[in-house]
Length: 427
Image (cartoon, rainbow, N blue to C red; front, side):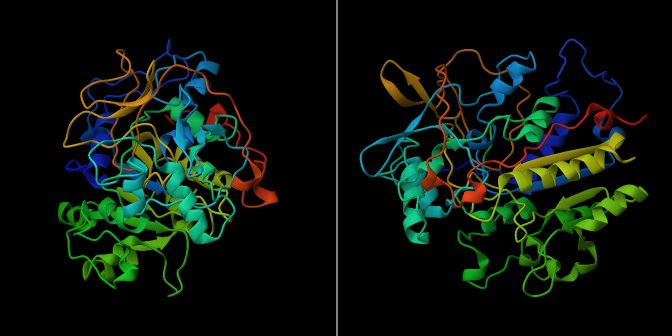
């Protein structure tokens, strides 16, 4: 399978905010659309762009029941989510179906080079045939390697609902949301994040820490410097070297010369209060403090989603909200199931479909339904993502082996949807 179309996050993000100018997204009350200023352009309406990329979630695992949530708001079911039940074969010969996760934590899965190819075709990763049948298999292998209990890999097929992630689902319904998530290449977090800053990994497919390598490519921040655009990187956690964590230092020598513009996340909130937000803000995730939404025994998805909600809320309550665009995505799917495959040789998406002959790949150039979603689709290059169908899945509870600890077996008090007063644009 030749992934020629490895569009980078950096440029897809630009496509995202350019598209947002003419896209109202999904509104809670479609009979009262947000007024559009016909004279508005990106140049005269937007002064701030905030970019944040969380960790290791596929669209199906995170927003797999977005249509159910939309239907509860009286909206149409036009997102490409888990409208059908899909399965993956386990190594013991059984089939594992999509199920509702009853835990905020799951054991880790992997989006590394070999595992990502295995997700696409379990028994023959080098084959061009896209099956999307290896998620359970690779999750099982990861558990055996890590010494964790879910050696069947069932966690890879789990999903959350709007009752679990109320704030993310609410925002996804209120604003423009893509139901196609892609990553630029089948690579892990550390390498994908290089693309977010420079649209390339310069050939690296493994974390730079394993090779002590670095990149010399031009980053988006250098282009911003050349254009006279102000920027800051807001970082949450401090590494073992005593410095705030950022991918920018992987680009040398430039990244090593920008310490004054790599600042604590507390400065983000202060800058908002003081009307001093830069024109471009890049927010690094809370890797070490467990709020990046990454799967893992000490990472609760609820804590990460709540952290992001606080960052959004601070922006919406600030004077910068009226002329800002906030872009949030995930770096990659983390080895969690998604029924939409990657672009292949620049052709239309291959997807899994369910029909009389069972589960099968559809495409390129063919789709399992004729009516395409009217959702405002903005294609970001973050995780692999793809498609839906028509049979309602049963809601299942996660087996205990998928849950890291008793404290995570049940979701804690869930994130409540924000009240409408602070979602109103300031005049």
